[in-house]
Image 1: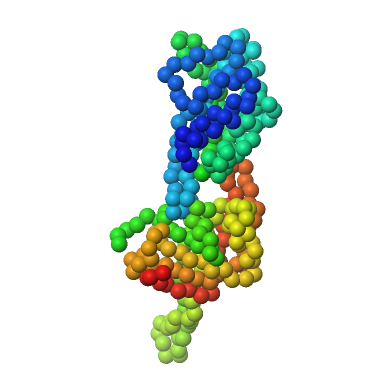
Image 2: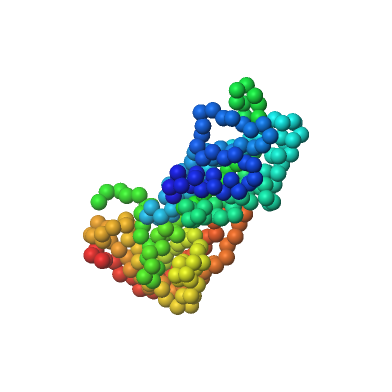
Length: 136
Length: 135
């Protein structure tokens, strides 16, 4: 498993969601779009030696998704669409559409999504943190 | 050789190296204890009988052609050659190989759960075994 390839391919998978701006690195600063969503593919947490003889490793990647505060309701509605387990705006469906990430891993699963807030430039943004488990 | 980690075992099933689909492997060598206690013995007496070894594998299943599922499922009811090397690399006196013939008595082609990769856990009886320090 090559971490940079995994992050790049996760970004590619997420860009299938219309209007979602995606970064495959943790930026020093962000420019959250006011009327849409923004995702950051985070660093991988790696557990080596998932199988014998340096076969495969297991990793967890956190993806943070935040929405601009166009209004309280619109922001939450946008997150609801991303949180859905299926549909064209679903983060889980977009990532799991190709469970090998174009051959970068053996398999993956979007395990969980936890709500929270992200503060940037003294503005609180509604967000979700997704946890993706990868084997490869 | 010194103490070594158990994470680099080579597992060869048939002629295919399947180490990258195996999470745990163990070879248990054991012989039957045959009782020969006689009338005038004051404690039980035994001699070694035939070997009843077994090999246990925890395998991540894969239905790809020539991968683990076809190797084991196609061999159910027959014997399959399995070779283990403690540390991947050259077989030596301090890194001996164990070549065995195993009767495939069980296989689990489907083992699903909501939170993990599909695995098959098998324990296979060994019907012949050879320890080698050179191959």
